[in-house]
Image (cartoon, rainbow, N blue to C red; front, side, top):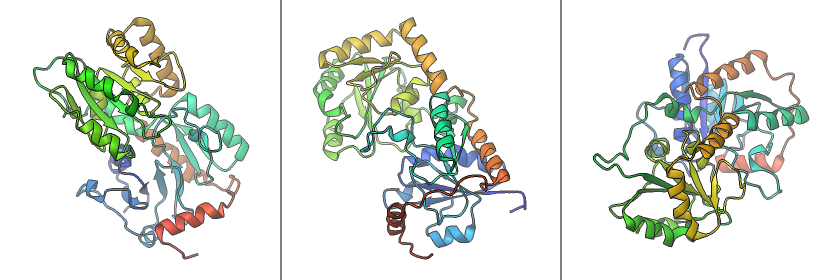
Length: 354
């Protein structure tokens, strides 16, 4: 390693985070820097790691390697991991509230030195929070996860040669209070039997296994149930999405494609929301025509949520990290010590050294 190169640790706790951070890994390698993965807990499937990717298995290995920066798509990272801590986010702000009655996307957990935000809609609230807490900095970079989508170099595993029917992608969140999967099951089943559309179904990895099995059993020549650690090719394959309050719908909108939601809590004008089962199909028919007023609202929303369509958000993140390392963190206030959280993280990682 040359004296000027840096080391980056990709710190993940869920298998879907592979796809979130791999564009960053590519940008790090393109710069000639070093990158390693670290898995927190037992919910990451190590078989998804590619032969060209390097994993550090223990905290002791990480400390010996001495990363300059730790890139985290989750909510927390321990303070005994070396390097500046950078929050990358595991999705967009879907307006979900946590048990404290606050928007979870903006919950400060005293772990990060830098938040790399996706667009004005999240940057401005985080800047206000940075002014309030003074324990972290904020840089608007765009979301690296979407770089391959905007660069147009995605594989197309869901394309069916000679089948020109519209493709409907149905996605649903796992939260029982927000998921529409149980409620719309019979309607999706009926619509998939009609054969005028091709259906792709994909759920959050934490979705109840009972619901997953129910939808898997629906598979027919018109409906495919998809399990994947990379949703981007899936988003590209569809013309319209049916969803609830999952943040994946924002990723879909950013392609300039419409979304029909069932019982969505935000009631925003860039979505076509329905509250009755029988209204789902007419709504899908309507948005497939891409009405001009709706498409203009989607474009306006996308400019606010993620205005970067160049595929270079990873490079912007690395530039922001360079600036953080160069400036240092001495001007930031010390983070409050959350003893319970740090105890839980030590227990999860089996690490008790001081």
